[in-house]
Length: 69
Image 1 (cartoon, rainbow, N blue to C red):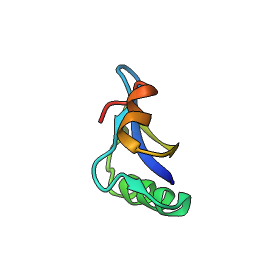
Image 2 (image 1 turned 90 degrees about the vertical axis):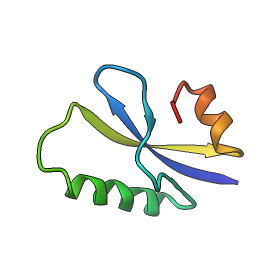
Image 3 (image 1 turned 90 degrees about the horizontal axis):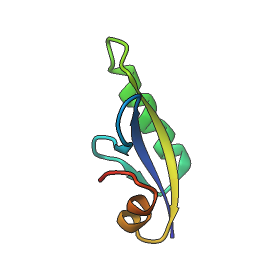
């Protein structure tokens, strides 16, 4: 089963899951979550958001990629 995870990628440090909700069944839902987060930001951050597609259990897939959970 495919999942789409919204992650935050800081300019210094390892990537990690963004604030919940952060795992979605569709790419469109994950993109919508990024838009929601970015629309609430009032200042520039040294972090950007990205989407990681995983197939199977989310936690082991993210850990294998070095993404914190």
